[in-house]
Length: 328
Ligand code: 5GP
Image (cartoon, rainbow, N blue to C red):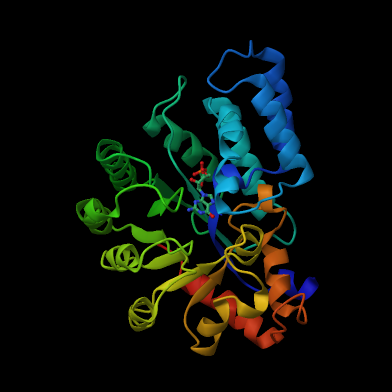
């Protein structure tokens, strides 16, 4: 473990609401339940069940089961105070331990409009917590959810660009959420706008076997800098990715637990290692997946079938690649 902790590395793919340490979420839940009449959009019973499932470790039969875990979490992070606490705990889990999990963290989150804050307020609350750290330690990627309509996408892109102009630590834009939702054909102007504003672009892509090659090629046509998961790329897509050196954000445990990849032996990381193509090992959502960035790196080093059996030198090289793929 000492070796794994000492490898210089960046966490580039961590979703805020999926990365809240369980004790913090449990505290937020007991405070929420003690003060709530239960008449909110999410019932107290649903929240209790959600926390119970997350505490035990959810059993996921397929990737869509995973998205059902979030409404209960969102009810608990819907005020500025609760969101700030959750963000502080996430940052602390990655950065405060000695040694820290990573040398650099890019945290991502989808701005929400709740009764207590608008989307800009949401992002400012998160950014205020990032400001407690050195600028080279952490940056924020603003996520769009595939379900969002164009009006909301425009609003979020405008806010992200304005915050960047103001000098806030907004470094990139992400596209995430239910992999089968939404229309991916109308995103060009928004992605061009964020690139012009100096932000990096990372897209969740081809996460399930049901994502069509047409959709994948459409998303690649927006020239993202990095790709999340990229599990089901066909040969044409792979050749574009290799040629344009788009870094792949690899989340091993996430893929195995969501059953989009059956074993580490057949994981698509293999083809990128062979090609010495840029990859970054990432944790995705430590809360439901009960993992950590160091645990993900441990999977690289462990002997098959428990891990990929890579050498320390290869693991160091992967750490370097993650640092090279940072957004500035
Ligand atoms: P948030 O953006 O609310 O801070 O983090 C949770 C959200 O991130 C989820 O509701 C979901 O939209 C997105 N997310 C988390 N993990 C994944 C993943 O593995 N794939 C996709 N497509 N979206 C994810």
